Length: 412
Image (tube, rainbow, N blue to C red; front, side):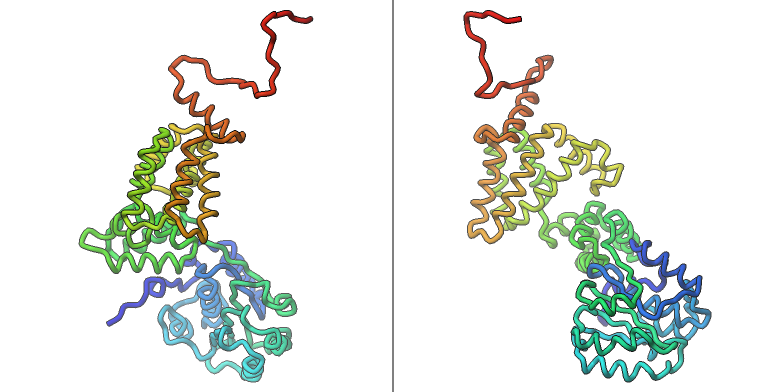
């Protein structure tokens, strides 16, 4: 038998189980406690952050036999029907506006809306992808959304609230959802893996969080794929990097060390490894930029790991601290700027390997450029390589600076 996807097996059933959206779930629960329930809601935000799930939970709270309540009982018929993987309720109608967003669909909804609920307190329409409803469709719904019968509630969910016409938006309570913070998402995935009883290396979770980009559903889908392919040892870092296409930390360490030492041979050897290993040069540059970003932050904030500014395991963080110490702040900033510029140039490039080699050459040769950031990078390198006890480099006169004459003289 096929197994349900991970994001469906762990879909929240109460507002307390929704992660990273306290700014939405808290006010909604308080409104239920206060008995100030609106007739129409607009849930907006990026994909996979809990909009439709929260709409179902709100419907559950409204139609619970003990409700409206912020905590559905989970025992009454309505709660069981609307539970995770339940059969659904005839009085809670979900509509996909991507395929039912025309004026005829809106008119049909309007005609059916005036009939009372069959077995629940409210008839609730959850309109998903609401931005796909046409202007004519919204206008056909306007009157019933503005002055609905007492038994009717609307919940619109959309990733693009600006496309919902203003006359509809003004009649709803708007709750904007956000992407989930990396730390919160990592802890949640760790809990799921413990429940699944499959060992997962600590270094894997940051990769999954990064692949999910703040979306719970996307992160759960990636984690599901990794768990499905887990061996007896569980999910390993090598397996995750290979499957997700991320660059191995060893390659990033090698190229960063080469940049710090000014070792062109080592840097271009890493480029050869990237190409021979079948890695995408663009992905490598993206991962390198992420590493340089972390090093810039570590150079400015030594305790960035403790403050949650960098999300990596402790052993990786210690290694990155040593790398940040080998660079100067200006040299790190210049390297990050050049890699960022190179990544932009690589989009659409027909020779990505050549672009990658040019990026490495620019980073390795600050002396070939006369701009301010290159001069500062050279000063950083000189100070780093100066003998112990030697004075640090101070003011460096420019080419136009006044030079005293050999005859001396001086004025008052």
